[in-house]
Length: 148
Image (tube, rainbow, N blue to C red; front, side, top):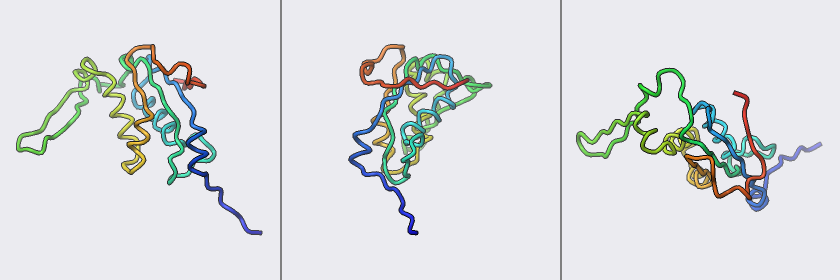
C-alpha cells in the first residue's frame, strides 16, 4: 500500500492564518519569544511543513512590562557594528528598555527564527505594542496564554 505525504497548498495556508494575542505583562522575555516564534513559524499546526510559510499573525501587548531573569537587566548588552574601524556599539538592555522596549522583544523573536527567505515575511506578521491597547482587536480570534 503506497503512502502519500500530505503537502499543504500555499493558497489554503495563506487564507487560513489566525491571529494570536500574547500579553507580555510579567512574562519572561525568552519564554514569550519562543511562544511567538512558534506561532510565526506555524509549528503549532498539524500541517506544519518546514519549506512552506504556514505561520500565523502574532500581537504582543504590554512589551514594557516583560521580565528578564537573573542579572540580565544589568549585564545583557546588544552589540552592533557599523563596519568602520572602531564602529562597535554596545547598548545595555536596561537602556534599550527605557528607550524602546519593543525592540527588545523584536530582537528576541527575530533571533529565534531561521535566517532564511521566510524570516522577513514572518516578521511582517509580528506586531508589538508597549501598552495594553492595539488596533487589531476585531481580528484577534483566540487569546493565547502560557502557564508561567
